[in-house]
Length: 358
Ligand SMILES: [Zn+2]
Image (cartoon, rainbow, N blue to C red; front, side, top):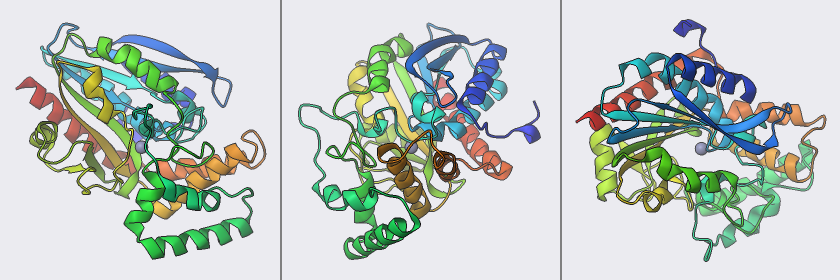
């Protein structure tokens, strides 16, 4: 396959097939963990894991796609690219673990959330005392109105822009996207307990990383930032050992805790929870977040999607247009975008492997 012919897949089934073929060509050991639900085309859904390199290596690099479902169209393409273009160069004491389709339901149904309308990266909280976000409640009905006509879109959007003007855009982003736990049909909902993908991670992560004692983790995202730009985001505060390591590996890493990132400081991201799942492993992790369209277009797509699944018919006439809107907010079919994000992914993954080789 030449690089000019590369393009994003348009279905989960195609992306998964491409990944499995690339894993086989690279000589990876492949394991599949089926999801109990079927996809939008009735296809089987699974988390697929390709492992390369010496299984006893002391260093591991994890590459994860589709934490946010639809963001997997880009993430999957990058993982398949890595298997085709980089796997053969893997050095002796490093293993690479490629996790495809962490949230396979969202991937297939072209949603950022999972089968429970849950944002997987708001789900890793302390469930004995989940965070509160009362300000979200005040605009919940504006964000996801009962009907989604031209008129309700226009009036609710106008009212939301008024709120944003009053509290400022940064605070508005924090309230809307920081995570909320009281509105299960809303957006950025964290759930009411650990969801399927969360439980899968708890059950399998330690096995996937063992016996390595040093690991790098790159979680692939899209939808925030300038078009094609790939920002590395750390869940750790600047000055912490984990943050400092990530800065040594990659240079410019933005801490969302310290307010430097395109992302709001959020509660319940999975990267922020894995230290406790991997005792004795020195972890260096970051989300790699690629920009697509502007934040308002992304928000409108997420509102439409939440409305469709809360009050509309996800298999009805309105669904394809909304799915297309969501896909356009999180994946760009322009080959120039794919070339740009691939170049950045090469830089970031090469730097991680070089650091692990030291
Ligand atoms: Zn994301």
